[in-house]
Image (tube, rainbow, N blue to C red; front, top):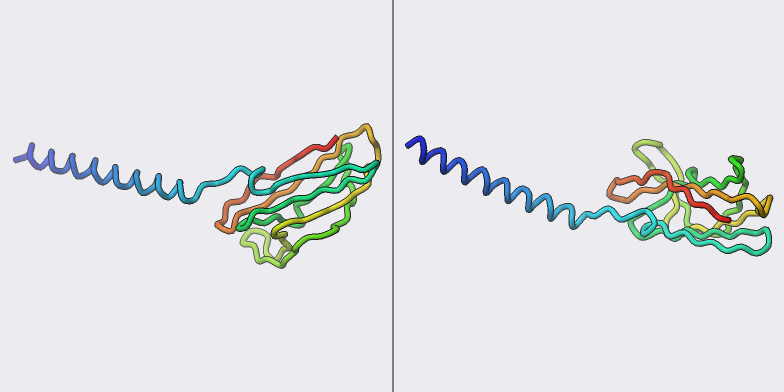
Length: 139
């Protein structure tokens, strides 16, 4: 009798483990976290000392306006927001903040042709996953 109960318990626990693994794998497949460079598409163009930067943001994601920094030789460079969709957002960590949906176009004047420009930004998904700060370089 003990062997029979053990075998029943044994098979039931493995079958439920298999079902829970299938459910968790299904959940992960339906809620995949995309790489940041697929969600926030970065492009830029240069014309003499003027640099135009475009960040296209996939639907269901956003960038924090206050997380966009442009620097050269570790000094922040002022930039102009040429176009973009900026909205108020209530964030559970930062409180009332501004976010960017869909895209943002910025422009700046490069101080020195020799030095590299670094662009930093951070964003999140509407499902609550936040990406680490992204850093890109422009020659």
